[in-house]
Length: 492
Image (cartoon, rainbow, N blue to C red; front, side, top):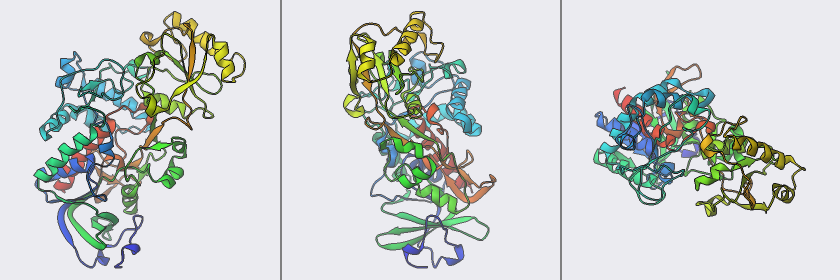
């Protein structure tokens, strides 16, 4: 085979069919996002010669689109947590991450990350990532200032607060404005170059190269109209992102996510996952994903209540915005409203982005119900029950924390329109290749695919359930387990 059209992501090229090696190195990393950068850094630091191939013309990937937030804690807390008065114990971080991982949580990865999270903070700062010693107590999604520490998950909400002592763990980089992910990537990319990694852009992976014993020896790529054969003496690390931009893969594995109309990604076409599967790797958790509608700040809106098209509540509104949105997508139909009164309603900071607008208003909840064309007393009964319990400081149905409970009784009343088919529901996938904490790709029977590693959203890592996701978990997983994969490949 000599033409690139004969090579396939889904079908490996046998070692005996490789005509020559165009490139030879110790470790090949595929994808130059946060996971790929971290893998390359650690492999190079371990003394390996590293070649990093990126399909696009620049580094960053989806990591550069993020807010740059990284979920960190444990060990008594990072210096910023401790300065803010939080003693974040490792076991509390571990318990929270166990719950956040959902029914398919990987306990070994959670244990390793909880034990190593404080050290990972130190690693990030050693690479050059700067954090301001500051804390924002108010509910926010992403600071527009260069402030650092925020509450980025459901740490204070039921059911998580029942198992783990809460602490804010979202660490945002010292970067003014939205989009600190680009800053984090610039820092990591600079370190990659300093370490002498052979970085090659506009190189698209075509197929893996295993031998008859199923050990991966290299990769076939396409660049500048030429087909290249790259040999990895120690291993290939796949860090090409998830598959949210491959809508056919989403339709096949996680069709419920098609209800979310704004996928977040760059390439994210599932190519790394397909490559891994072609070499015998197992793809797991493929039906899971993350979805969110940025409906706060202001935090006063958390005192409102969400109802579905039947006028019924379905979640405790004080949990993380992504968890609320996960429950929203589980509701029948597309009609969703956030109910607020004059005491709790303020215009949203992200109103233009989220597309959440007032869908109905009235001096009584009966008027709002009629304007929404809901069955008589469906919404009114929901509000009456909530108000009665909130006045007592209770929420027996959904366990919203007392600090967020307030009867919705001060007119005028509003119903904010959060329709699924209209508002900004963004999403990304959480399924990928099954790996050990070291990044080694596993088969269906959980034996190791020799010479093959994966990290970031190409692998199934810490974040694997939208109902437990917290902001910063993806970059935490990508950088930490990218490091493990790169180091392990260099040791092979």
